[in-house]
Image (cartoon, one colour):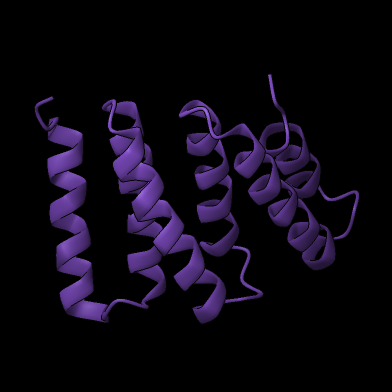
Length: 123
């Protein structure tokens, strides 16, 4: 499958941010999440899972308590895992995101409720 313009642009942006901020810059981690979503939308779910898995792991090490981009990366990973049929792993990642956001934001925060509704759904 050919690469879409979105994937090309986001790949270029990611490379540029990596040169500027290094692999662990928060802007880089957000760009990884964006590119993972674009890869999935482009029908390249396996590549998206690989990229997002690595990005989520890095984000948890670099910014473990950060609301952004750590848990956005986890949320996107859960969505892509579910979309590619890896439902059990998607649910595990989704619940990891929910638990972390509940701890960070509290159980009734809008971001926690939204994450619970979308990350842990198996439908």
